[in-house]
Length: 159
Image: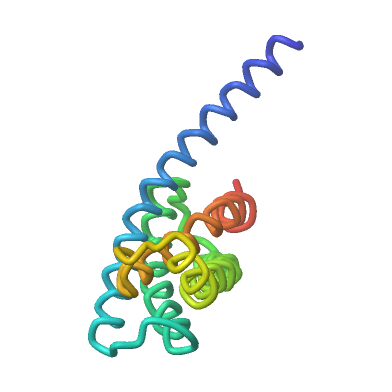
């Protein structure tokens, strides 16, 4: 009996690691969508920090979430069911909104409060405001990664 439980646990671990690997790949694609939209917004508007940046980051994040839902549903968590799609998308959106709050907060904190401290302290003139736009976004993405995976796995696409 113990051997069967160990094999079952090993299979579940391998499945979860596979899902996490696919989730990371989808996350990379989402990040590229997010960064492309965010950089376009900031280049067009000239706004690269503060509340304006937070709004632009929110818009780019939402675009990436819509992209993410379809890839995570079909590929990462291999959810082929067609039932409760409204409920699943609502749950996905709720998890994503919490993830967005985490993501946007960390990104905005980085570009608004950490950048002015780090650049002069270490004399990092090569880190331009536009580069900090992406640094902030990547910081937000990194911090929100675990929350999103666990939320999608155990709330949205649970089997």
